[in-house]
Image 1 (tube, helix red, strand yellow):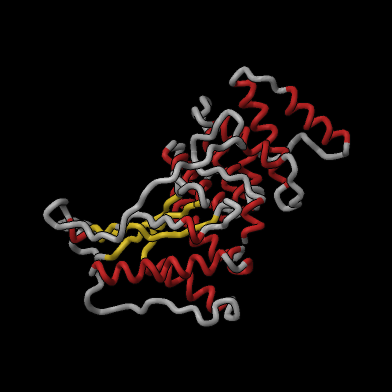
Image 2 (cartoon, rainbow, N blue to C red):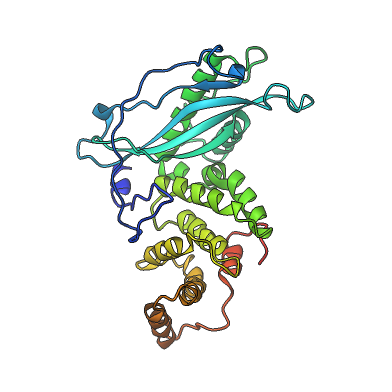
Length: 323
């Protein structure tokens, strides 16, 4: 796992710099111990459990290479008190994903929210499809009483952290569609619906999903490049491009420069055409992009009458967005 992490490009912020592959290292911070917030100091305390992140440099690689860490740092009860009384209440766990080094703690982690049932469904599916890799891995049982107690939430959070850590340390489990679905399906479904509605709110969802997947997988892996291309589509979906369109398009082009995955090459020509149009809209020099297209044409690759970038993405990973 460490060797794989060392080959990654560590994009851990949606604020990508001018050169998208140049990224600053996060500053280290001090963290405290597990705390359950006092009911007299905050409102709706029965709905909130929190603990600070734990940073232990002594357990991180001595060569200062990044280590992927999962932490359940907070949980809340939904729906909140007084809302949707007919809906059965449940706990939502906030999953934080960081890449810490011995010298610093990741200051821009990715986060997702998942329910107990999301973890349980993933566990059961992995146990069914990969019994050998999931041997001797336990899962916290459902309880009839005390479901919202701070101690139970804390115990479950630790169990979920151990499960996620086990998954990413095993290449079979880490690269399974089951794990990928757990990581992205909730947010990606919402983002694609918003994209279909031409709603810019899809961009922040896609940015967060990209940050998450980029921490877990190789930077030129299929899940990362697919979400990155979807992000480019979302940013160029309107006649006036989104302010972040250029940085994501530039990063996507950079990621494709040395790509050898034949499954993802169908996205490359549509991506080049999308970027060429964006560069024209922004008054940027399109020559490097047109030269790439011409080189491909000279090699006998058709560069005309290709699908749009969204159509090409939809063919690889069908979702709800308009194509």
